[in-house]
Image (cartoon, rainbow, N blue to C red; front, side, top):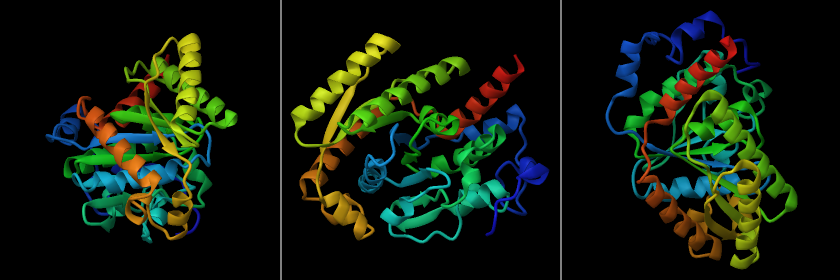
Length: 314
């Protein structure tokens, strides 16, 4: 596609519409037609402070497992360094790079993976995608709002780190699962993510539940519980928040083998120790998600963009 050019007035007017499609108005009346279309996908974000934890592998397996319960959309939110397509073994023709360039709408980049599972590819090798502007996040939110009624679940594979858009995607979802390894640097970055998450939600006046904690690549359950307790104590002491411990996942070479074969552990080695733990994690996540209001990740992204604009005007 070449270098991403500035979105400009043309794409701003379209706010995510495909070429030739009717531009989306930004009036409240029109917003109602976008956001009030009945049931929407329950959205789960998988996040981590540190890169290389195995977050994307977990996300891909959960998307695969969810697709056996209902139609699922996986969103690769690691924009610019996306790799979800590798684990789903697909070769997308388009990605969010095309959306931000104004050449495609969000619906145009949907890539079928298998029956019941589609992917929104993040695009790889485009540094521009790592720092989206407020109106670009709003554009993505409106595109998601159109798609969500077509799915039962949406899994957002977040980028590592603490960028504004990384936290925005996490805050937009019904539920966020924050994964860390026992590595002290990963734990430090996980706490940093939580600190920024709480601060950003507070500044924008967004009332969101705290992320749930998953400790992965552990030698045994005891190690995972020790890591969880350390993080829980720090979060309560310095943030005054309760951090719920969700699950542990074992350090299992099945993850490496499946990545090399461009498949998920849920598909490639479901009977491995990690495969069984992922199945249990999937059940736990879905049972909790069913009890949370699913207002729509797309709508929350749009609301967050509006809140950000309001903060800037003060």
